[in-house]
Image (tube, rainbow, N blue to C red; front, side, top):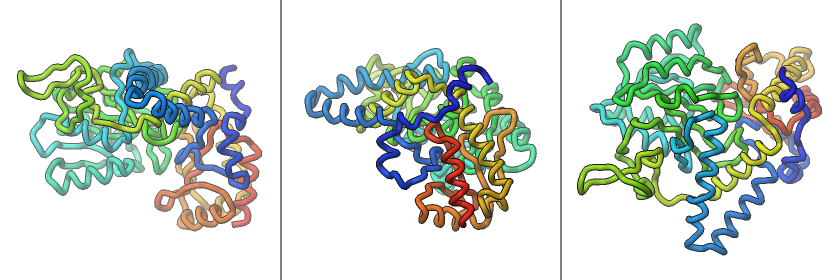
Length: 394
């Protein structure tokens, strides 16, 4: 572990004093689901309101002229992108996904390759597209042995127009660390490769500098970026999807290209923009990102802090200190590679445990039969001990 990471092993509860004090009896162990908002975001929330009051109609000059590019720059620095112009924001990833697919010019139905482990923003929409004849869908089992080889082999067949897959699977916490190999398949005329990075962004160090011209990457501020909802983003490589069919009037802000007399689009990622939105989430995104950088909370450093707590948690569980959690199967134990920011525990009683813990003021969450425990920089060993103590009484 590098010295930078060692310096971050102490929890920074001070940065989250308002959220922690708001519910002093609560033990929040779901930072992977709804990350607590740092104090810096309250000032940003107020700033957004005050700008609307003071600037009125001219608030958009600041929101689009200052806040929006600052948010783009934060993403570009975190992902080591050559340019921030490839970043576009939207209220949620579902809207970005729908806009992206609308930009594909290949004949319908589109042939889509994905997995059975994708988040609902893709899962539900993809199922509906299948019903409507918009796509055909091939799914690879994300928990199957040799998943990576099977998925990459399917991608290499050349039989698909769109490849959509998570970097970190939201249910199991399994990391698909070979996802970047898919960039070799991507072409502007297809296939397109879309990486869902919501559980990877600011959780696992990610460098897209060598892949930025080929891969789409979608994520947002709700989880490890600590900014809450309303600020999802898409990295869109130049030359891919110049004219989305689903389009809003913000996509014509700037120098336009298009057929004479037709609908014009900007040539940067703004071509995927929609229409009027609430900019408050972007204010929080910028404030949280500025705090992260000012405090030296690098993704690698926070990941090292969390990994240490995860190891401690699993050691306590194995020793019987967390009661029945000892009976659960750990789906993603820390190893030598990248690690999700949550521990996934599979057990038939996972849902019952979640509700019993909620009654005792402990927040975790469940996906089917998987209990997820998410940790962040506002957790310490005392939280791990307290959590296990409550679990012992289940």
